[in-house]
Every structure is written in C-alpha cells, then in structure tokens.
Length: 335
Image 1 (cartoon, one colour):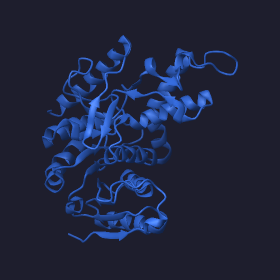
Image 2 (cartoon, helix red, strand yellow; image 1 turned 135 degrees about the vertical axis):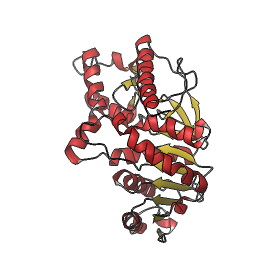
Image 3 (cartoon, helix red, strand yellow; image 1 turned 30 degrees about the vertical axis):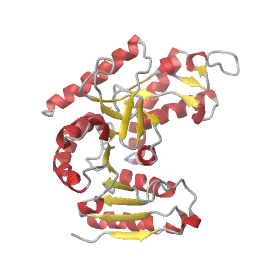
C-alpha cells in the first residue's frame, strides 16, 4: 500500500475556528465529493486535530489530502492525511462513512441499498480492526437502512452507531421557513424526522419561530403565514430538494458535508446538542429495532438520549409509516 500524505497546518496564531481537543481524530471513508466537503468543513472549523481520509482510489485520496493541506496557512492547526491503506484511520475517535454507490437523478434512496450493503459487508471488519472505539456516523444513502445494517454487522452499542439522518433536511426546512417569514434561519426551530427519504415529515406541532408557534406566525399583512397548504408545499420542496440539486449538478455535497461536520463537532466537543440523527429505536412511540431520525442528544459517546417530544396522532402515524418502509427494505436485504 502507498504511504499516506500528510501536512501540518499553520501555527495556532493563524487559527480562526473553534479548536477541539488537540488529540482528536476524525476518520473519513470515501474521498468523493461528500467526503472531501466534510473534510474541508472540519478543517476550516478546526473540529479535530487530525483528519484522516481512506479511499481505495489511492491517487484520488492522496490528491484530496494534499489539496486540503495546501491551505494550511488559512485554517486552524489540523493535520490532513489520505491513503488507500485503511490503517490511516487507526485510533480515530469518529469514523464517518461516505463511500458508496452514487445516487442517480430521480432515483429513490432505498434503491441504493443492495449495492451499499455489500460495500458495508466488506468494510466493517477492517474498520473495527483499526478504530474499535470510534463513534460511527453513516452518511451514505439509504442512511437509515445502512445504520441498521452496520449496527448488526459491527455489534457495537446502538449509541455509537448513527447516521446523518434528517439533519440536512432539517436545515433545508428551517431555511425555507425563514425565507417565507423574513427571519434568520437560526431563529427558526423546526425539525424533520422519520426516514431520510420519501416518508420523512416535519414536526409541525412543535415548530416555532422564536417563541411563537409556527402555525400562529403572521405576515406583514396580519394574515397567518403558514396555513396548511403552505406547510404542505414547503414540506414537499424540502423532501425533493436533493433530487433538484442532483438533477442540476449531479450530486449533493456541500450542505451534507457541513451537516456531517456539525455532527462530528457535537460529538468531539461533547455539546449535548439536540439533532435529528438516525439511530436504532427502542420503544420510541411504539417503534423498536429500526433506525429513524428523531430529536436526539448528541455528545462525546454518541447518542446520549432520544427525546420523547410531543407528537400529534397524525405525526405518530407518519413515524410508523417510515418505520414500516424501512423494515420492508431491511427484510428484502436479509436483515
């Protein structure tokens, strides 16, 4: 195997991001558009002391690592390495899996399942050998199915296996609501839950802007800004946002890279941040044994708690619909 490339970044006096524990290490599997975007976000934010990227395409992964390293003077003190030898991930605190078959325009995420499950079968033993104590974050689609598969293949505690779930979908939702209301997205508190896919849905019953319930928010004319038809339109736009981007540029990578990086930061900084990551549920609203996104507390050891937030009867039914869709997919794959 080829030796990894590595470069130390500029002295700490150049740092502008939020530096995490200097001993921390993020491992990334896959040097494609998503993996590289995630590495870039983590580097410029100073989320970890070391970022290691593994990919079977040796020239590609070494080039990506070198390109990132060349920006050393402009980013916090981080070492970036890249190799086609899985040992580059040795001792990683977090391993983010981005490798997998590419989603085609208009292709449902669940159709990717069989190809990506086979990739996981091959990868899992190698990853556990070099990073047995890591928290694993799956970004590869269909991420909910693959979370269940990886948990079974690895035998790891469920709190240490999660996927990015609907974290990006939630960001998309908050952006659209903010645009409609003329408010900063940081002041919008709303969340997409369920499958990261065609059965996902917003938790409208607990959505608010500031402290005002979303359903009570009024526009400049004094009219309700988010009646049911507007909410349904926005939910549909959010659900199909990825397809629109894929049709236009062939892939989504920047925003999902940022979403994955934010999860890494929540873990390494032990933020106890509430995020809709996807992990195996255990009697959550009556659902057990399948991975779905629900509001969860994310910290140093992974998913610390799945929050029992209020849901309407309709929302509970939608969550069960998501669970059934994923159970069917897992059954078809032999899990």
